[in-house]
Length: 479
Image 1 (tube, helix red, strand yellow):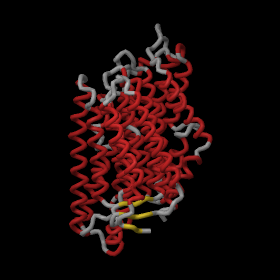
Image 2 (cartoon, rainbow, N blue to C red):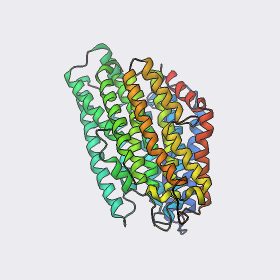
Image 3 (tube, rainbow, N blue to C red):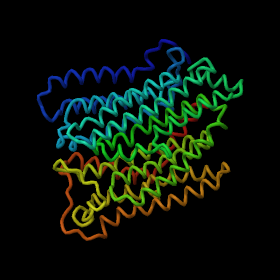
């Protein structure tokens, strides 16, 4: 169904923009240093978005604004995951930013602006709108990272993020311009139709290389990963928790819209590139994570490895494989939020406790939270019955059934390597003697959020279809 000026299809985006303007005005008159009303309105906005999105599940695909915008099940499922991830990240962030002079309205407003950018990215049906959403997201994240002005590490991370993000956007935009120059259109369906009737000439292939490099930069995949560990390490932990999880969901939506939506008829030119990037990420991420002693840097290299597993599904290029990748990225976001939630939980008195050795004594003095972190680690390692096992298993299965047996064997082998550094964290908590109790947060809301997040990894582990079926239905509706 097509309607060029049907504003109802962007009701969620209009709702969020009105909410942002309202919160911005309300925050100007906030005398409460805790910013309780700003926080409450921000979370209510995300809940409202989730309710609106959930009500639209199952509706027909609609295209609007001269083909630049599409509302379908694929975008709706990704948006629901984005709302949930942003809601959880703000729950984690509140006690952390209270102690670090970051309890300002800008923190919540920038988070909502980044959510708006992600919503645009996953619903865009033209390369220009995708780029606009990406820049709205990126600029919001740059400002978030730089929000802790008295931290040299945060300022350095913000500058690196800005420079590398600009470089990635440049690659992407140059690739888009080359494609536009040949096809004469920026609309994704029209580019697909062009390639269905014409061979991809050298200029389109050249543009596709730039686009894949830009996407790899945005994901933080090897060999374009050099920025990611420094940004994750230098950013305040609550912001790292957010930028390492939720934007990855939107990046998947962007990658699918561009690669499969635009270049599905020329997939022989990009599948091998994605496969190479994926294998490099799996190998490098797992090997370098082995030697890390800083927990944030270990999780950052672990993130590179996880992006590799996720991209392996993308490289197969079938609806079932895309569904598995979508399942993987949503589960990864849930696990990563819990992982950095533990770092936030252990950060108090304006000091971040980031070394793996700082976890010593958790098993003795805080057994419940040590158990929660163990659940996160073994889920990230892909051990059953935790939720992290199922998407990884599905991707390995699809690699074998689609003739990529060697890639599956290598990925499985390095998954075992990953188990070593995850279990190293567990060993520090339970089997290394500690003379005193490690510092932990006293925030009740943080304790509840952390416990619920970690327990969900078990609950969904026993009911993996509760998420996976939505992923399958999202791609079934596109067929």
